[in-house]
Image 1 (cartoon, rainbow, N blue to C red):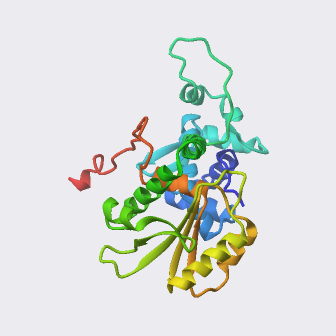
Image 2 (cartoon, helix red, strand yellow; image 1 turned 45 degrees about the vertical axis):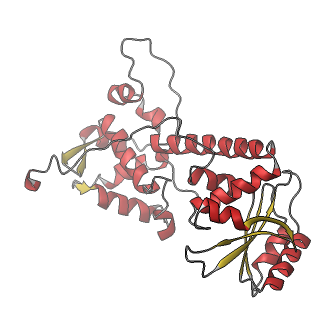
Image 3 (spheres, rainbow, N blue to C red; image 1 turned 135 degrees about the horizontal axis):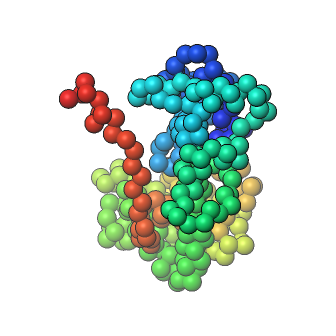
Length: 303
């Protein structure tokens, strides 16, 4: 089940503070997780940066409510409800969202700093800034993956073979470009396109089948079965089938069955994602630095 969005957290956050006590953000996060009946795995969901998604949403909920003047900080990390927050709860709102918070000048200035310009109609969203950054990152990355596959299909089969070599070396296989290239490229050797070292000393080998196929031509079970037979003929324990297209459900099911030889499937999407992850065929366009408060700097006991 999807994690609760920030608009779903405003009201329960405020209600928890309506006990005439002050609470730490950790206590509030724990309470909200229990109230939302989140599983342990849901609480541990993270962004690509490693930041916890739910904790991030709670932190932004705190910021939004504070900007609206409904809560305030007693001291660092400790929060309490304000008189305005109590008044809001006494009105028995069915929910509190960003549209509701827009009635407060502090929140409006926070969401839309006009700097002397005419006020625009705000676009209300229940996503935190990190959510929006993450969503934008995923969209850009998905477009990059698509562009990479398109670019690969415009290249020659020899280029694809070289790409596979370089990717495997960047991932720590094959020893070096020279060594990997020497063993990869023996096309037509009983259905095996090459073999690379799994470790630098060459104790283990991985046999490879590489197919630069059109995106609408999936690799089927017969192709995997033939590769399995070729691996058995070599007495191989491990095989890698890599393609620019995809694998049929039957091919994936066959691979998942218990076999003496382990075969790993890498389709076009995974291939492109691995290229992005290992900086092959891509370069950094823009870098944004997201900064946060250095709590040690403001801790007098830490001096």
